[in-house]
Length: 452
Image (cartoon, rainbow, N blue to C red):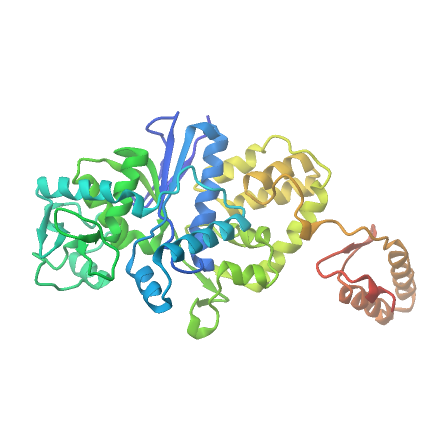
């Protein structure tokens, strides 16, 4: 059996994944709050944990892996969007949920085994809050239910923060109904214009943190193998999940994985800087989904990622080359070197390096299988990368003649001019001692060749 090692944010060390039940390896990942389009930062955890999901399915078998990723469809941001647009909340969340699924599918992200919506688990959340109150870990006050942080001695162990740091980092709300500033909301009251459900504390709605604890317990049990998400969720969201779940007597997650954040062209993504892009923006700008996915895979999930146009161009060039190699090839077994890289803390840059080796060695069956497990190819070559059927042999011969003459005269101006013309027509020019190879590339335009 393949050994998978993962960096556990909680223990701060690399740990071997030893499933609680090898017949049901379980993973929970925090999903989106559905009120708008997903931006390219939102997509990073989706791609990271999809890659791990694919690895787990390969190692343990698809029928022995359960992956849960939730949708938060009750949230103040959603309420604000409904108020500003005049649209029903259910309509907004249904639309944006489908946008998310469509955008992630374009990036090759498989749908998880379960995609629970928070509003379908209100009963389970209320039951968990009642249990916490009964155990002395929560209390009711002024229509609210709050978790008593001081009742859980290990609070802060995941993020490694002091109480002062946590108070500052959480922008803690000082409210008269709180016993302690650190206490967080499990349930809060709703007015007539806000979605609400009946509860022992009055009509209201759940706090953000309780939903993941309730859904994870309902779908994965009291203890499961992996919990994932962006490192921006480590505190307070994941810290609070651990506290409330363990105080209910649940072991909760064994291994915690957090991906680092994303920036664009070396700067933090911001609307004010004009470098804020949704996944839809990137696709409409002409970056194919497979190319975008490869850009994500080029950086290890545990390191900050820089989205650049240069990386996208590099990824497209490489994928076109690989797709041309495997176009008429049936996938073989996934090479052990690729699996070894992915099993080493989801080392996607290392896995891509192995694909480069397979390409250079001419192992096209292994290359196709490797592309498959990385989610970079499906059953067919993407339409955008289909090989253009064009005969460039005459142009290659003409360029060869010019090069031969230039070797005698030492004047390469004619060679450079023809190369420039070919490149302008979208042709990739590969010159070596062995000969000249011309390959139609992105933006190939046969009409521009007529001038040559």
